[in-house]
Each structure stands twice: as structure tokens, then as C-alpha cells.
Length: 205
Figure (spheres, rainbow, N blue to C red):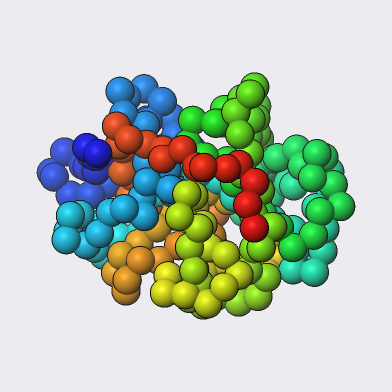
């Protein structure tokens, strides 16, 4: 798997918001690395990323702890920009998260709103056994690289409120998954020719 780190003209690692990263990647031969593929990287292979968080092209959504999915999720940042996801097909589902992998959705801007639109016939991964509390070390599902509610070795930071966000990764203190990064946060970008590792199943526990 070949990969490329987005850099500034002076050779330093460039950090951009997720919309900027998505737009840039859509114009390149390589796509944004998915969370399932990012878990195969390591500090040894990507020394330049050892002190940076980086975006994957995967997006996650889940309801507030103890609550069920409603028909949509809308997140508005301090600049008045909204990010919207239709979750009506998951209405009433509790204790779960949904994941859109790299290339399985379109990220469309309409005025001050960005909308994630799943592509026809593309999978939407459902994690039924999704961690519900706090930030701690969990086991990882092999096919998607997302945490399960089982004690393990990979650190995951998550919010307990309703969340709809890109998945970011880092290696500074071991392999870490960040679900607490808003779309407007600025992180490094990794492109890969093996952007996604197809999961064995689209539904798992």
C-alpha cells in the first residue's frame, strides 16, 4: 500500500479542515486513507505523522449515550456552518454507531451546509457493540478499525453527546482513534492507493 502525506511548499506537514481535505483528495489519483487501512500504519513507517493527528476518509455518527438515533443529525460550528446526515433508516436504534467508509459517500456543500450522502449500493457499517462511555482503551474490529465495547489496547477518544464527525488517527502515544474532532478542526492528511480495506461484513457486533 503506497501512501502520500499532504505537505506545504517548504516540506512541512500541512494541516487542513476535513472539507478541504475531502476536496483535495477528490482531485487526486489517490483517495483519503480509510480508518480500516490507517490502522495498518505505524510510527516506524510514518515518522512524519508521529506527532500529528491525521484525517481518515471515514465518517462516524452515533446518538447521545443512552439515547436512540433520531431521523437526522445536525451539527453547527461556531462559524454557523452546519453538517447534516439523514439517519431516518436508523431511527430508534440504541447503543450503536454507523460508519461511512472512504469512497462510500458524497460530501456535498449547499450554502453554509455540508451534507453526507451515501452513494447508491454502497455499504453503511453498523457497529452494534459500540462503546458508550468515556475515553479508554478498547479492542478493534479487524475489518473496519473502529472500537468495540471490549477492553483492549487501542485508545479511543469519544464524545458522549450526539456525534457526527470524521474519524482521525494518531500514533504519538500508541495507536489512537479520535472521534472528538469536528469537521472544521485542522489535521494532517494521508492519501493512499489502498484507501479502503473492504470489510468481511457490513454489519457486526
